Structures are given as structure tokens and as C-alpha cells.
Image (spheres, rainbow, N blue to C red):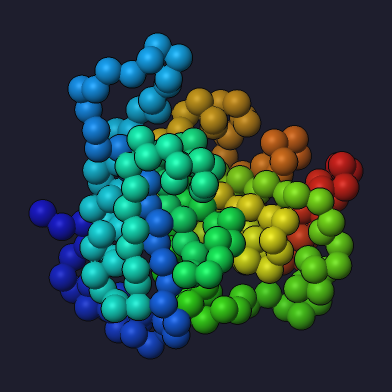
Length: 230
């Protein structure tokens, strides 16, 4: 059984062939080891969706020669620490030279699958679709580290625009990290940040807003949050 139908594979392959320019790397973290004895202080995050997520990413990686897939087990401490991975499944989109701080936590399915393809295209082509004004504001006004979490569900049609905006901001600024978090797969986090509707964007774990904002207001929120303003 495959995650992507043969018909959809052909459509995706044509899209990737047309849009990918330079190689793009998918770094995926999963959990495959079982039955080993660990110290009591070592907490292993449960990962009921790891198998499904890996199957999907593996199928995507085979649709273009320009996609490089690198899979790591969560137990590889050096790699886990390098990418600061604390949730599983985790997918990082980067190129050979740089990690842009772009993360997907959870199975990238439903409407968010298009976000995965758009993010790979962005990294491959080395450019975002943000306006020149937006790029300038990100470069000149974001001076402190920013962590953006966008909570989504696969059936939310408004979530991809919020995630893609956050990923584009991360691509434009080395100070920004952007994460898509599948709200249903991570109920503890969803409860912690009171995610009652999606998309919900949480910045630096302190400031949040709901809904898919346009580029300008979204960047406004990021700048205010990194300045400690509401």
C-alpha cells in the first residue's frame, strides 16, 4: 500500500520537474528502535505516526532526482541535538549548505502536503514569494531570535498559507525558526498553547494569534513579538 496514488505521483513528479532548480535535502527523524533498555531519566517520545510519516516522505523523495532524503533515528543523539529535535515525526527542509530553521512536525498530509511541495521549491530555487517590502522589514527589523509555531490540522484549508508565510520568514532571516505542528498529533502542546481553532500561530511561546493573516500583518506580529510587545 502506498501513501500517494499513482495518478497523484505523476502530477507531483511533473510539478517538481518543472519547479525544482537546485538539489533540496529532506532530513527526516523517526523512531524505529524498540525493546531496548534506557536509563529511567531518558524519556522517549511516543511516535504513533512515525511509520506513516516516513512512508510518505520516502515516496516524495523518489519523485525527483533533485530531492535528497536523509533519515535519522531519534536515538542518534548527535543528529537529534544538531537539529534540536524534540518532537516526532520531524521533517527538516534544507539544502546542502544551510539549515534554514524550517520544520514540519507530524504527518504532512491533507492541505499541508502542498505546503511541503512549495517549501521544497522555495529552498531549491533559493527565493521566496514575499514582497520586497516584506523582505526588507524582515532583514532590518528582526534583531532577536524568533520561534514561530503554526498549529494546523490536515483538513484546514487556511492553514497552508500561515505555514508557508512562517517558513518564508525563516528562509529570509537566520534569526527565525518556523515549525508546522499537527495539532491532533501533539495534544499536549495543543493544550499548553490553548489551540482551539487553526491555524494558530504562537511566537516565542508567549504571543499568539488565530487565523491566516496576510503578509504585512503577519510580519507585524513577528516583529512585535521579538520586541516583547503585544
